[in-house]
Image 1 (cartoon, rainbow over the protein chains, first blue to last red):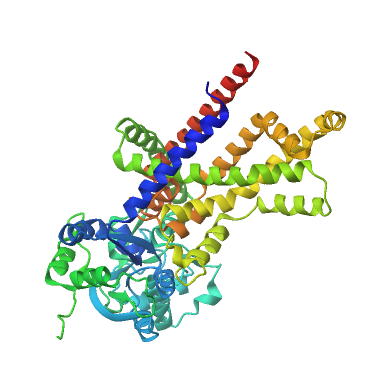
Image 2: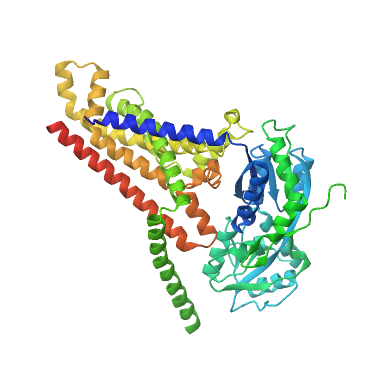
Length: 279
Length: 250
């Protein structure tokens, strides 16, 4: 007879088995990479990681959060490799003994997107700071990440160059979402606002609505990515060997070519620029 | 303002299309038994099922004890327990992250970014819910049984077991409330699980991810699938409790 207790018991047994299986899976050689939403959402990792796993047998688990949070997580020793885009913070991370060494990996660029109606009249501009100053002057809605991410830091630098105090405007025309790139673009599309985004996320984004690229091509909009092995001396649980294998592969000719080969709708979105070792 | 109206109309048509597309997509995903989706659904059920098991094992007896026994400070305990039902998932996620982080006290367990960490977070989230609601169920029943227990001089552990047994249909609803809360939350599991593909990606974190990619139709389709799962679980429990009730009468 089926009574409630035996059903519960059976359910418990099934769950324990699943738990054990999940545990067994975790035994497979794997590393954790703390990275950003831009690299994950664009699909770059879906392209790179199978190639790396095929070659080395190492599975790479990606935690995709904002650069600020990724750096914080890695500084707690939660992760084996840090792969983000905020050079000054990355160098600080290494200087504080949290990482071994920082390597340039690739760059892409930021673009300013905005509504086709373009209330600030900045479409076609190649001077990002001047364009943002116009947005501020027009009081047109600008949607910011506001989450201490790499993109947010880059945006704040542009505002500084434009001589605009966005803190004072926060809650007015300047809207801080405190969320990821995609969420921020969703909001910008919803309120027909301007936003700064990396080109890769933009190319892969599917809810563009009325938004289009209005400013691009300014050298100030370059977006450099770096990769760092989390310091195994400071954090003994870091899988140093497998982590180093991943770092080495990403900056190797093979890894760099794989990055160049990655395309979104036929367009190359990341440009490898790792310096050769000793170069 | 004709332009503004046109924009609104455009947006409406756009969202309606997404809505229809979501239905079609949900159907395709389910009919095609999409293997990635099946993995995600399986993990969602395994994580939430395990968390619920833990929550019931702790929450039922704790709730029953508080509901049945009289002790000093009982009202205070009940108020606290009820307040804990409002624990924000993201706070639970943060606390569990700080515990399980390599910089935290339980880092040596190496549970962060594994399904186990997600089970811990969901169990912490719903144990107070299960305890608080089962306290209510048992208390009501205990009042009904008070005279019988007194006349027969039943020792309290026996009485407790009798209350848990006779309150089982109420407690099943309590468990379902816990299940619903756990399977629907995203704030805790995304922090402690990391939303890693094929490892810690569950229904809710997938929905969050697809939304952030701007693929609203797919996100909504996954939402429909999640609702269907909740419906299936509730229907199963309803069928089971009906079956046991009939078996009890027969």
